[in-house]
Image (cartoon, rainbow, N blue to C red):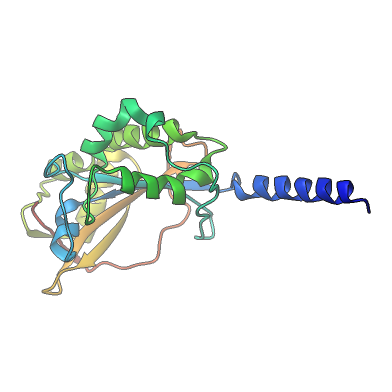
Amino acid sequence: MKPSSVALLQALVALSLAGLSVSKDFDFFYFVQQWPGSYCDTKQSCCYPTTGKPAADFGVHGLWPNYNDGTYPSNCDSSAPFDQSKVSNLITTMQKEWPTLACPSGDGVTFWSHEWDKHGTCSEEVLDQHSYFARALGFKTQTNILQALKTAGIQPDGGSYSLSSIKSAIQSGVGYTPYIECNTDESGNSQLYQVYLCVDNSGSKLVECPVFPHGKCGSQIEFPSF
């Protein structure tokens, strides 16, 4: 084979592999929201962003493509890193609704970059970078899970509530069955940490989850203050 033909073949293979790296065959998204009180109560390194302490509300953690068998793609397109200029009109809202608490927290860009690189790039066929963040923010507004819990008398006051009542309150408020992820504080208390809801693979609407993550909460869950 002539050198030019070899080079052409190598280029075609590289293009093919590049195309395969962008996942488009995932089945649904997990839309994940995190309670800051639980994060900061159990993490030794909890830092507020440069914009100050976030509001006492669930914050967006991410919009994660997943498969029906419980596995998920990740880091699908290294050629499309997070570009802050593409979400410039969303930054103020992201700082409020999608805050970072990891140390060093900074202005949030490191957190958002991680979420885009690991998860967002795997949904590029249906959501570009701006749409990825805008849709997540839209689902945050739509679900309003803190209000759903408060309406049911479940307050972030350090009290203990049954897992079933928390699930029921969110399902009644949102219309879909949530998955509750718990963590454990230094005293061994099971705490309300993250809430998972599911979105269809076009990123356009909430759906019932075809599968839930692995994990288990106690029958009684603490809802810590923040």
